[in-house]
Length: 168
Image (cartoon, rainbow, N blue to C red; front, side, top):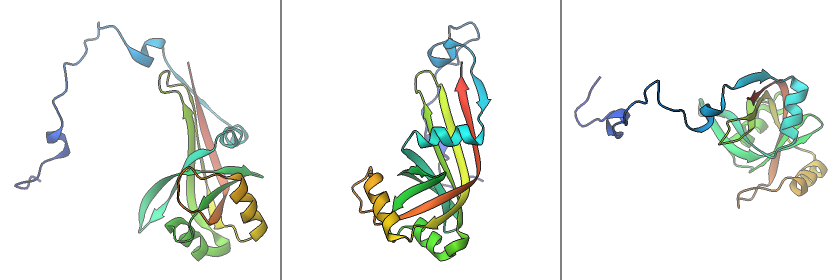
């Protein structure tokens, strides 16, 4: 449907340059050869997740998916994230109590030049951290990457952990 005064996103983009011919030399990562996807076991995927500190939390916000970059810590197989008491994620986790709210957590380490690396997704139930000693411990161990005050924490108990490694 076309409305007067409405421009589709594609119409505002600059025209693409010439399409490379099949005989044109390849440049960039594709020139290095084909890539292979290797499925990781849950244990391998959690091991990789534990070796990095930055990922993305996926949760529902006003009935729509929301994604936020966050720091994390892997603690006894659970993913711990510091957050704010008034954040949508914390409010939902607190509202669902012991049941928890379903979330996904994704982290990766993919080289921008070679396109080699890995990606992990953990899906599970997110619950607020209520133990004051644990909360103090997480405040010491998880250093926020932003300047916001993060006075709370949540734990994700993964039920499904998948991952892939991209190799040459």
